[in-house]
Image (cartoon, rainbow, N blue to C red; front, top):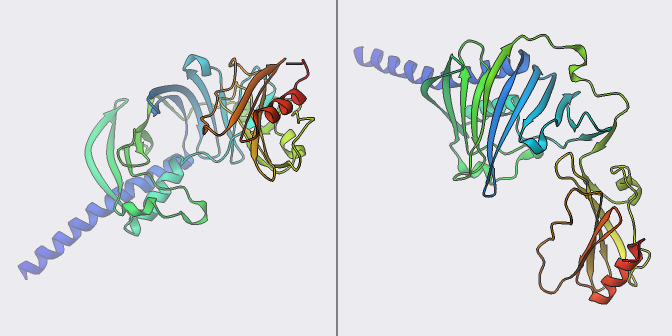
Length: 335
C-alpha cells in the first residue's frame, strides 16, 4: 500500500511539474491579449557580423492595436510602426506615405499559443529555470526548446511560421506579462533579445494614438508583380522601361524591394530572351550614391549609372554591347 501511495505521489508531482509551465504560458497569453500598457523596450540582435540595438517606445491595447516609435538608433529615430485592423504599417510623421508591412515574425501571442499546442503533442519541451527579478517585479523563467529538432526541417502546414529552436521567457508573476524574451531561430545562431526597460500598466491612451495621419497614401512594402500597371501602384515614381530590347525579349516579372522605410524602393524588371536573361534595376532619389552591386558570376555583364534622380543597373548574360544599348534607351540625359 505504501508503495502504491508513493507512486501516486510521484506521478502527481511529475504531472504538476509538467503542467505548471503550460499554465504560466496560458496566463501570459491571456495577459498579452487583454492588458493595456505602455513603456520602453530594448531589442538586441545580430545581422551578419553587426550587432544592432533598437530602443523603442510603445503603447498597446492587448492584441487590438499597438503603436511603436523608434528612439534609437539615430538613423531610424522617428519611425512609427502601427498595428491596426490586424495589419502592421510603417511611416514617418513627416511623410505622406505609409508602407503596409508583410506578415511579421512570430509575435508574443502567436508564439505562446504555438508553444502550448506543441507541448501538448510532445514537439516542444518546457523547463522551469530559477526565478528572477526585472523592474522590481518577481518573474518565473521558462525555457522552451524543440524536443524533436526535425520539426523545423519539415515544411510547416498552411504556411505556419516555424517554431524557434530555443525560447526563454521572463513572465511577471503578478500580471502574466512577458518582460523579457530571448529567441534563437536555429541552434548555434545569435539570440534575439527583447526586454521591457520601463513599464506603465493601464495608461491613458488617446483615441487617435492608433490612427493614421490624414492624407497619407498606403503602399505595400514590396512584392512580386506580373504587370507594370500593378507594380506602378506600389511606388510613387514613374517606372522606366527600355526603349530598346533585344529580339525576342519578354518581361517575365517585376520585383519591388524596399529597405528601411526612409529609403527608396528598388524596382527590378526581369527579362528573358531565347538565349539569355537580364535584369534592370532602378530607384529614384536614393540616399546612397549608387546601388549595392550584386555578386555575379564571371559570365555576366553589368552596367551601373545615374541619370538625374534615377539610379540604374543592368545585370545579365547578354553581350556588353547589348547591355550598353539598353542602358542608352533608358537614359534621358544622354549618359
